[in-house]
Each structure stands twice: as C-alpha cells, then as structure tokens.
Image (cartoon, rainbow over all chains, first blue to last red):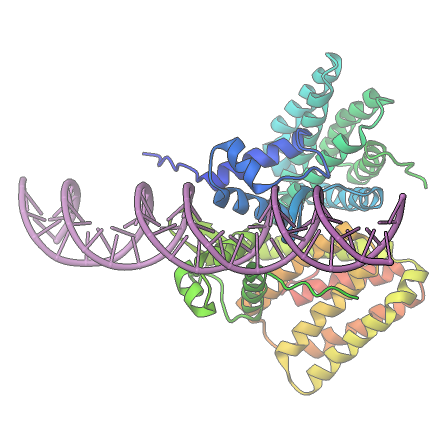
Amino acid sequence: MAKLIQSSLSDQVYTLLKEQILSGELQGGMKIPEESLAEEFGVSRTPIREAIRRLAEYGLVTIRPRTFATVTSITSSEADDIATVRVALEQLAIDSIDEASYADHVETISRHAANCQYALGIGDRAKVFEEDSLFHMALVAASNNTALISIYERLDAKIQMLRIQQNLPEDGLGYYIGQHARMMSLLKNGEKEACKALIHEHIKHDMGYDPDQ
Amino acid sequence: MAKLIQSSLSDQVYTLLKEQILSGELQGGMKIPEESLAEEFGVSRTPIREAIRRLAEYGLVTIRPRTFATVTSITSSEADDIATVRVALEQLAIDSIDEASYADHVETISRHAANCQYALGIGDRAKVFEEDSLFHMALVAASNNTALISIYERLDAKIQMLRIQQNLPEDGLGYYIGQHARMMSLLKNGEKEACKALIHEHIKHDMGYDPDQ
DNA sequence: GTATTGTCTTTTGTATACAACTTTCTTGAC
DNA sequence: GTCAAGAAAGTTGTATACAAAAGACAATAC
C-alpha cells in the first residue's frame, strides 16, 4: 500500500508562498512579515520562518536581517543575464536529447504546446505563460539530465517572476508561440543546430530583446 | 562609519555546516541530527533547523521528513550530469567575457592559477582542489553575469563534494593543472573557441571522463 | 522460524515566550 | 523650521516545551 505522507505545515506554507509569488499575488518588493503571514495561514511563526528561509535560498525572497523579508525583485540587468543563461541551458538540453528520450517525452511536450496555442486562442494570457513555461520545462526534462533540470527549474521560477514584473506587451505573442511547433519539428528531424538557433531567437524575443544586439 | 552586522547564529551554523560538508568533514550519507548539532555548537535547535533547511534547498543536505537529515550523496549518474552542465556554463562564461572585464579579473584568475600550481608542488592535494575551484569561479565571475555566477556557485559546491566522495586518482593532476595557464593565454588572445574546447577536455578529465566517449 | 503486535526510544514538527535589534515617533534644543 | 536625542512600537532571533511521528526491539501467537 502506498504510504500517505502528510506534509508539514512548513512545506505547505513554502508551496503556498511560492505559488503566490509566481502567480503575482505577491509582487517583487512586497514585505512579508512573519507575524502577519502566521495569522493569515493560522499557524505559528515557526513554519513561516522556515518557509521564508527556504524561499530566500531559492532566490525568490530577500531577507534583510533583523528587519523584514521582501519578495525579490529582479533588475533589468539581471533579466538580461537570466535570458543569456536560459538560452545556454535550453541549447544544452537540445544537445542532450536523444531519439529514445524524445520519444518518451514528445507526448508531454506536444500537449503543452497545444495547450499554449489554445490559451492564446481564447486570450487567456496567464495560461499562455503557464503552458509556455511547462513546454520549455518539458523540453529540458527530455534531456534526462537531473542537474540541468533542477537548475532550470530555479531559473524558470525567476522567469515567471519577470513576466509578471515587466508585463511585456502582446506584440507578436502569436508568432512567438507558433515557434513551439517549429522547434518540435526540427527536433524530430534531428536538426539540432537549427533548433538551437530558433531557441535563441525565441527566448530573446520572449525576454524582450533584440537578438542581434 | 561602516556598520558591523553581527550575523545570526543561524547564518553562522549555515556557514560552518557548509564548510564541514565541502571539506569532507561531514561526508555524503552521514546523519545530521538537530539535537547533537545543537550540543556541538552550543546553541538551541532553532538555528540548527534553519541552517539545515537552507542547506537542503541548496542541495547539500537531504531531509527525510519526520526522520532525520543526511548529507546528500551524489550518484555517479548525477556526477555525469553535473560535468555536462559545468562544461556548458563555463563555456558560456568564456563567451561572455569581454576585454575590459578580463582586464578587471585577470589578476584574481592568475593568482589562483599560481596558488594551485604551488599547492601541487608541495603536494597539498586539498589546497590544489580549493584553488582549482577558485580559479574556475574567478573565470566565471569575469563573465559579469550574476545569474550565471550564482548558478555556478551552487554547482561548484556539488563539484567539491564529488571530489571528496570519489577521491579521484592523482594521475595527470599536473597535466591537468597545467591547462590553466593555457586557458588564460588563449583567453588573452581572444581565441575563445580554442579556449572552450580546452575547457571541455579539462573538465571531462577533472571529473573522471573520457572526453571522446 | 516467521510474522505481528505493542512498547520504548529517538528525532522531528510546532507553538510560545522572551530578549534584542531596527525603525519610527516624539520631544526638546537651537 | 530643522536637527538630534531619547522613548515607544514593531519585528526578528533564539531558547524551550510539548506533541506526534518514525524506527528499533522485544514479546507473543501461529
């Protein structure tokens, strides 16, 4: 029989806070005092503190010692840096995917591509971003490189925060989302270099860049 | 006047534990019960708990809920994955370094290269690895990419754990360390592709691989 | 001999109390 | 009116107490 592990309050608070940050409910710069969170969640300060410390280690929260913690806000220079690293990591993922692994993951990858396209159709902007993240995450997962996956997860969280923070314009969102299908077809045909080039353009566009600059 | 911030016990324990893990004093798989650490450090369990949670988030500690925490041990398949990501990140760093930034960092980089060579000469193996880490860290720092630097720091911690865990043979350590100087000269001449190729060989050797496999 | 149950021990998870520090507000001097 | 010093309020940092869960071990049933 599968064992049901009841997760600790600390874990639950951690998950909730992370969701609130990634959904934009808690935005960059906002104070998150332990006492008021404790009241809000109906627990003592202990599990709140642990969750906040963990989130700080994760990079989503900034602690000012003996003062208060805030939701981390990302500067535009950091955004540039994140985009650069993201390109490198996704390109590494593409290099690492072999045929067998692609076959294993293609179903998940296409599902998120389709969901993303659908969300675009009905104008659900939040859903577009969510499914876009899941698409890229699935691509990276197909690399089967655990170190890469866990690093990318962390980076993805920051990317989600950035999207909320900078609230990019809608321009070309359709074109951008359409690239997912092209990536998949290039991957399927083993045209990795072309796929990597497309990813470079894709991400630079996503993150508000001129790819040629 | 510069303000002296006295760091919290929690921070101190965090730093100490991290050092003990990275130095090999605490090895992979070892139990780290809160109570005994509390006695050892002469503090209560509270700061110990916070430090352990943060280290778990950092990836150095594995928590088994309601049971105990252990120092994370890295499987050989994860070691492969880490090496692959490491190559990609260092190559990205090389790509990102411009002349001005190289000029700013060359002093630090060379110092660690020299220290590493010296440590090799006097047969101080631990020091060789420490300075080697610092050399690579300095190289990455020259990229001026904050996201890359913080990701690499985390990865570097795992690399240090691996070195202790697998206790690689001495074979070719001299040859390997000698590559540092070649990297620097390639960088200085702007031969980035050659430098990246060398880094690939260097890391694969460091981490116990056949580069051609 | 094996499996099961119940007890004991160990260790974690959470709440709470208090001390210490930071910030803010107020008061007073100039 | 402005600045500085001191008091007050708010928040964090740490210790401690207790409850609850997991694992170890012995006793018992079959």
